[in-house]
Length: 168
Image (cartoon, rainbow, N blue to C red; front, side, top):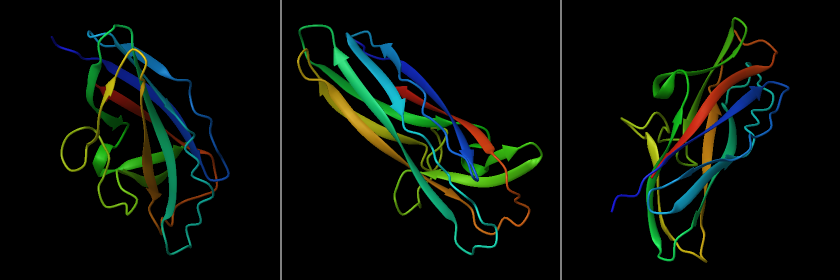
């Protein structure tokens, strides 16, 4: 028997004197009776200072939660990818013609890029079992960084749309 599903969760991010609220959860059902949903916390980039020599770091979370409708346990194996303009090689926040470069990472040391599901980094794996009385829950942390010394940066509300996709 094949189990599988795909969920997309989008959220909007604001930066430089801005913040943003997370979107409500999005759900999908797998063929084996597992129902999974994604939700996210807000991405809060905070204030960026171009003259600062260090990058600006931030975090957000993606929550995966699954339940089962049948009587038998269902194994959950999947990946979460992050889609958005620029991908692994050059994500940008925009405010009209103004741009700020940033990256998203899988690890707190910010060494492994989290991106489009292929190449270096790409996706975060999830695995577990969901049963009729035992839900599956996992919280994934997104580690972000606005690159240092972007001299053309001006004060504004910068945005980027990132979509989290769960394939299981």
